[in-house]
Length: 358
Image (cartoon, rainbow, N blue to C red; front, side, top):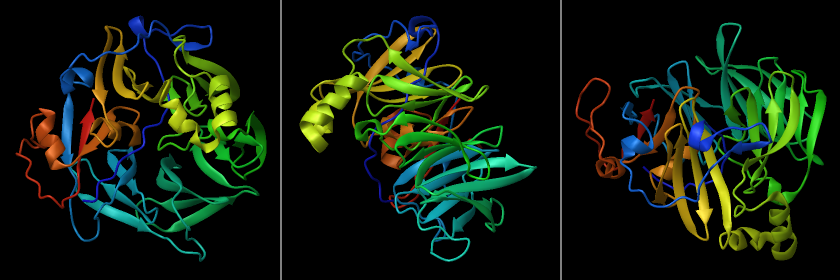
């Protein structure tokens, strides 16, 4: 398998106690600068996990993975080439793939982002493609319809109300539209350093979706109950780049602002479940992964391209998803058995294994 470094970027969420939520616009209270605690993988994530070896055939050879969506017991996976979307069941068996790249009716130029929804009892795959959202039947891959916009769209979430939350190229970066593509609301003046595309762009937190402003300590929260936008901060840790400091870096350093940021401290990515929150942070070039929950926080050093860096590609409401080649699995310290208790054996060119922590 052609494994690729994954850039770490993401969003932040929160929990309780040592990383407590407050009502002052700061999500994480009492977050402390991380240090190396040398935690076991089961402490960093969970002692309840499953390893899912993805089937390897000529029909489902995966390149570098860009996003994994778990929906109704199936795993939907996109890769860097943007051509196809692959579907595997809970045992890792290949089910089908969506191959619709092209410029004809019902085809997409590239999979910029995707999601999977159940609508009227049917499973649908939604794909963002330039100025369109294209919708396909998840079972047979047939094209159903599309929603067109007079502007480019990049990332999205469909809401329970059937409204759609978008990242666009307009003067206001965020847009809320109806299911016909008509704009209902817009938010966030376009600033280049505030726009950083992520595998999971809108991160769930309770009844909100959070959109991080670049690698700053600020976010825009979209409330799903009343469909309003509100700005907040992830933590009251003063060392992290603020949105103002990030903008100043861009104004003074131009497109070299990211390199300049690595000499400082910033929030790179965050993933959350109902049990814990995981933060990837940079501290003057040192990367840390921190688990924050009711018992406190535990941290470890990490690198881009490592097993930990795959944390950012998973999108599941009930679990944390990572993926690993066999060498990484062997180094993980996990019990290398599949869901049926069978010892996992892999070849060097096989598809990766998913690791799902519950």
